[in-house]
Amino acid sequence: MPHWECAIEGDTERFERVEDLIIHQATEHDRIECQVCGTVLPDGYFAIRHAFDEHSRAEYVRAYDATSDEVRRREKVKEAIEETADINEVIDRLEGNGPRA
Image (cartoon, rainbow, N blue to C red; front, side, top):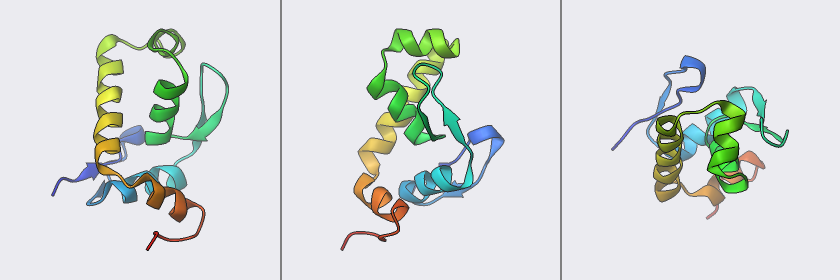
């Protein structure tokens, strides 16, 4: 089973389940402000998802001075997480409801 590494600001903590990684990123790291629109959100997966679901690649590149390789890497991370994660479980856990039965 793959290990999911946090990688926010050099955090090398690893998780067996991607849901645990997302919870960790949302609760153990500072929130960040989107440089495109000013929305404040958890760093990590939620920030990547916001950037690519709410803004164009061009907006992201301009706001973050990102290279095409950095954009592709983040898009791959987003895709890998979304192929694996139970986002409803993550939301329930963040809301304090525990996993869905």
